[in-house]
Image (cartoon, rainbow, N blue to C red; front, side, top):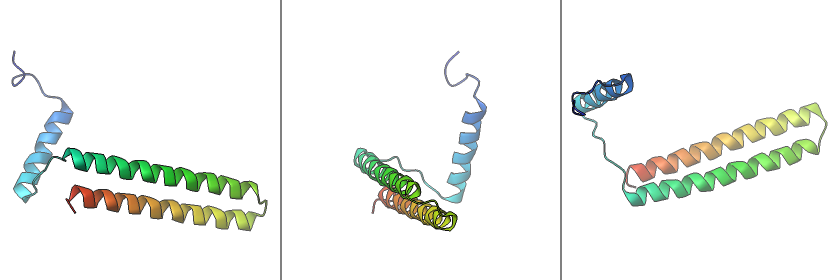
Length: 100
């Protein structure tokens, strides 16, 4: 039995349907170049470090206060910072994928 006639997994069948649907919609799939992969890796590493730094700063600030209102404000600021960093990272990765 060759690989072509081997039974396909549900995942493979779903991926084939998605590729066919994309082709019908005019969406073409371009594989990433090695430079793009490297650039995306660098961006991910940079933002992973920034997120870790934000987490450490947040934990330090929480240890410094016992006021419930202040802690809630710190949590909200931390949440917004994480969202900002994540959106910034995703935006840069998308630009790299699009070749910008």
